[in-house]
Length: 324
Image 1 (tube, helix red, strand yellow):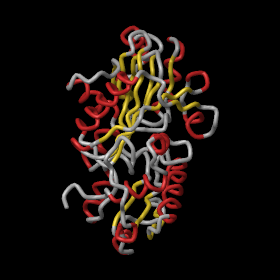
Image 2 (cartoon, one colour):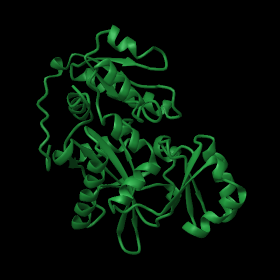
Image 3 (tube, helix red, strand yellow):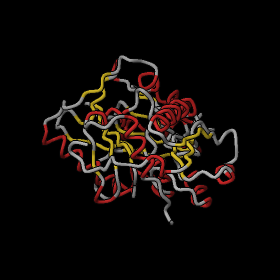
Image 4 (cartoon, one colour):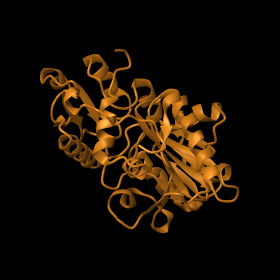
């Protein structure tokens, strides 16, 4: 693996019987099923005894009853990425991929993540977090006065751009709030940063964590929404579009953000680069990134010579418990 020190010499047979957790109950179920199928096929192609397991169709206790040795988490969103599943797997004593209970729970809450990053003086866009009870029509109308326009309106506990609106004017705010409240009882209002959208994948843990190459995302009409993520081939993913020194600076920022949250195994940070001064701003950290044909972590790994199956096998080999 060029530019990294990750060992890809892994004995697939030694990993035992593996459950690929996919599907689930969240709004991201369709994406999870795509991710999970990709992971399942990749692991089997390398000789892993891998099996699909959908928590929406059978209880987690069945993981123990069916004698699985470890789990690859390909679930996204609530119930899979938010610490709840991780806590259940800890209780079952079944090693799993990705971040532990606390890091998963914190990273899934975009508001809490931003508060931690802000406290540590890591750059993130200015924001307001308001509960459903605080969202009177009068209060909503004042939000652009504080954050400027456009305003990005998000349900902070969802992923895959579900429920997100970029409100261009005051007249867009009510509809944006109504949409987001369909997914969450607390909303995150974020200052819009004008400039390139970036993502940076991380592999590993602590001081050994390594950032993969940055990807600049260019979507149609500058809107990297659910459709442009999963349903079109028109979105462009660019490597090497930034000066080398700036890319290295952003990678170091992402590593700080990843370590601060206590992430492990892998993750992916999404950022905006302010065009006027080329300053990066952290948006969120994904602790169970997508693994579909359009997904960004596999693209970044491929750029440094790691195939999709190799990436899946390496991630599986890192599976562990918070408290062994």
